[in-house]
Image 1 (cartoon, one colour):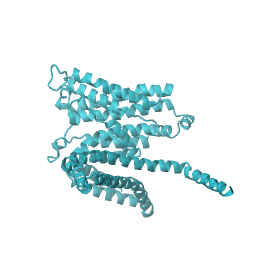
Image 2 (cartoon, one colour):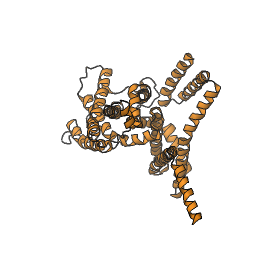
Image 3 (cartoon, helix red, strand yellow):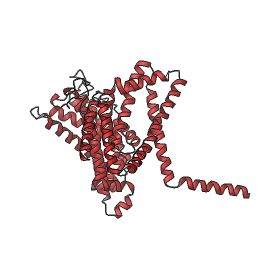
Image 4 (spheres, rainbow, N blue to C red):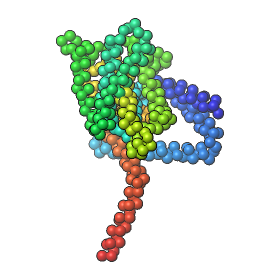
Length: 418
């Protein structure tokens, strides 16, 4: 049994690395890993329990799949009504996002995984860290600063690790004020984190001017100088020659972060306390859980995860800070977390979906001249449909439909009596 699990894990890791590097043959290894793991689970649980588990997974997957299909159908109708060919547009969309520009899909997904994890970690504690964009910015600033100022004599791996730790610390510290205000005064974290996000974003041009972006001395006034190349993240191309020259190992770090986040939330005492806080703060306090400390911890870890997105973007792709980032990774992380229903592992796939829609949308607009706004409409519809399903389930859980039915029956009885 253990041998099957280990073999499935090895196939999954190898297949993921190859597939993410645009070696699509890696998909066969992923299928093999899935088959092996399924066989191992069937032996462990028995046929009946395994079949029930598969049915449960299929039911959970049904709603997102139907939501995506419905969104694509509505998008096709909109394109047809506005004079565009939906067949050609979707051919370009899928070819661009899943094959031609797959490397762009992966690059788009990396920061979204980190910010999605940041939002999810806060959500699990009943908190809404809407300021992840600001924590992303502070991660970019700190990483750029250290990448420019650290001694070139430092070992490359040590410098990269130091930059990540400093960025995470900065992202966590940015959430100290919202956490203290939340615990001591009840100030809502939506307002406080958002205000700090705009503050950091507004101050970022000053940092750029101080580190290479002075228009009096630089031909590139909207960006800092490039960080030292010894602190760049390794590229896939260094081990897989056919990989795109921009693909870096940040996607692997993001996937590891997703599984670590899941482990913390599901398998540790800290995760239990944070989830208990999210379910019912009053009950958590009654059971002796330090609500204030758990609130602070959840916000600090959330800020650190969002800052990792900024650090990865600087070390892996941009290698500098740009004045007009307009990244929106923090805001989009909210959509990613909601779409994944706050499941850290599911965030990997929803981020890749979002990345594929963006990459494919760019290719679609270039090839078929279909407005890229269609993609934003499709994203919005997908999110709306899935959130509507969640709202329906919550209303059903709390007996809304039964109460509504009873009220309707009483009104009919009154009408008949009248």
